[in-house]
Length: 100
Image (tube, rainbow, N blue to C red; front, side, top):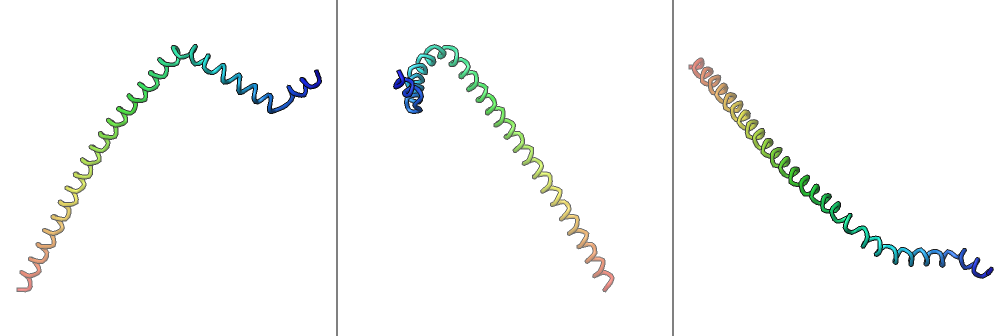
């Protein structure tokens, strides 16, 4: 019996026994739990797809808002430049009228 006690204390034997136990129990557990795990997995995948779709919609809306904002700013800049140019033209016309 002392040899059996020494054998039971061996890390190699203990790890091998754990490995064999896991190899036997995992397929049994998967077979038993599959009917319960599959619907949960489907629910998780479904929720992920819904979140992905909502994220795409939100990103598209933000992109559209940014395009509108950029267009507005470009229009404002164009109007400011045109106003500055017309002011410069008026100043130069008034200056040339005064020289003559």
